[in-house]
Image (cartoon, rainbow, N blue to C red; front, side):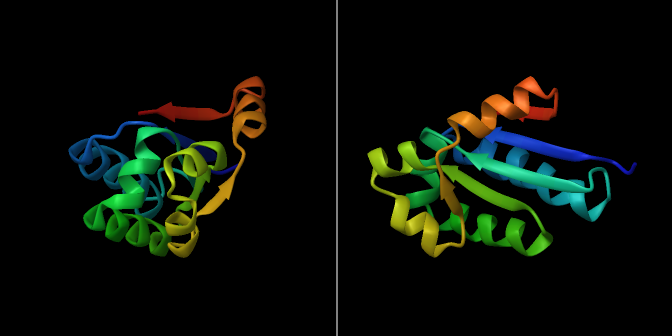
Length: 113
């Protein structure tokens, strides 16, 4: 069965939390094979941070290179004016309300930060 799929719902706009928890755990989860698949969902203040902070953008690219699937809430990205920036970083920008509800209803592994 393997180690499963972890979803990380990242909503914090704090850059230290982004670097020292979100990216550190997501990247190491795959490198150390703690999880088979990791999806990082960028939502709210995290979308604004990712859209404007060059260091965070570098960490996003590093996470993607490690195999982390990065997606963002389209409603948040649109309202915060960062959709184009996120898409240019290779982030999948979609409406996440329905998919997140399914993740929760199915009892998937979900870490919220």
